Figure (cartoon, rainbow, N blue to C red):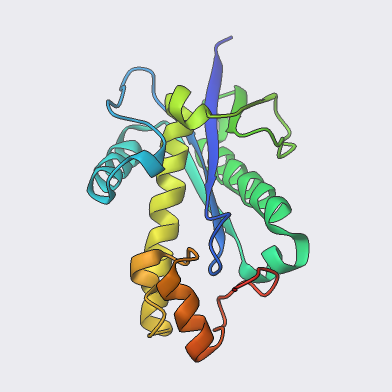
Length: 189
């Protein structure tokens, strides 16, 4: 029986606002995708192009998130692991019976405790194409969410910094106060 490797990664642990996203991707070995690497090392345009290729060529993928309320209740690490479990479940729901022997390779050193064999690999998004693909899907999904949030919460420039703690973002919080998507458990200073 062939064992299939699905990559898992998250995006959005460091921002002051917005949910944390995760993705799980099962690439098709018959349809390799050139240029997969850590999403943070790719331009926005390249990420979007690769996202479209991943969605088109992958055997399956799942994208999920943990909300700001869950981040504040659980802490960012536990919320990230929750988003990863949700992404893996979404992948498994999508592929159904197509794959019976599935294992997960996760970027980092924290095991999300899937119901399948799992390997954690620090720097995996630069080493394993499936993890890189998950990194790209998580990052592009979160970025799109933050761009939409900028329309609901003008004046914070979410479309630019995506919730990360830039000087301009901190100044907007100081001027306007936090909005509904700011993480209350994070320090804004």
